[in-house]
Amino acid sequence: MEFKTGAMEVVEFEGGQRALKASSSSDIIIPLPELLPDRYTIELDVISRAGQGVGASTLHVGGGRERDNTFSELHWGHGGFYLRGGPVQVDLDTKDRERYLGKPASFRILGDGKYLKAYVDEKRLVNVPNALFKRDKAVIVRLEGRDDDKDAVYLTRIRVAESQKTIYDALSADGRWATQGILFDTGKSEVKPESTPTLKQIAAALKEHPELKVEIQGHTDNVGKADANLKLSQARAEAVKSSLTGEYGVSGDQLSAKGYGDTKPSGDNKSAEGRANNRRVELVKQ
Image: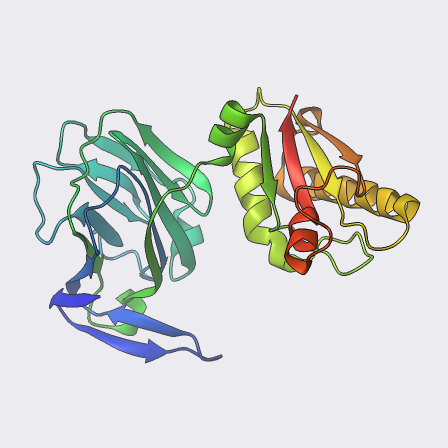
């Protein structure tokens, strides 16, 4: 990360979390090892200004080392979302702006060719088919902070990465998607809290595509008795379904749940790595 302009400092919150604090309109550069790929993800965790006296957005994100209005630039804050520059202009007001005043939020950009999607806290803001985000060896981020604690902007995390195949893409192309990101204690069927990011990802895909119906499959390794593994895998599949419908608002009509125990291994049960790969949850398109 490179400082470009403005007034910024690293601060530490109670509990040890560190953040980059912007107390003026400040620009940082995120250098990349190569050109931004055709499919990419940009994620920023920020804490917006606590007051409403400043009309500027919380952050701006664009490609390259300099702001260039011939290319698309994304602006977001408690007042709304705006797409500026390039061939398309978008203005969206925020209805629940108090939700973001002085509070953390996760802003995410997904690019795929000219397609550009933006999300805040897993809620999709926009899907633009003909944006023009600059492909370069850097990303520029502006934080619109001001010179007091109430109107400072804090950046707690930033990530730029090449996007992998989405859940929907995998289901469309392969008919199935497997994950080891849904976690359980040994011999238990309660979904662990560490599973939240994966469950959010699954829920977002299903809610974005309400026509999609999937079977949630539970799979185990071959350690223990086969009938016990079958029962456990069924309980785990049902627990995932219950989490998606009860906690994340996915329609139950889109989901079924079935456990297969150790009958469909994806790896060799003779090795620890193979057994780990066999302990999985899969979504199978119906």
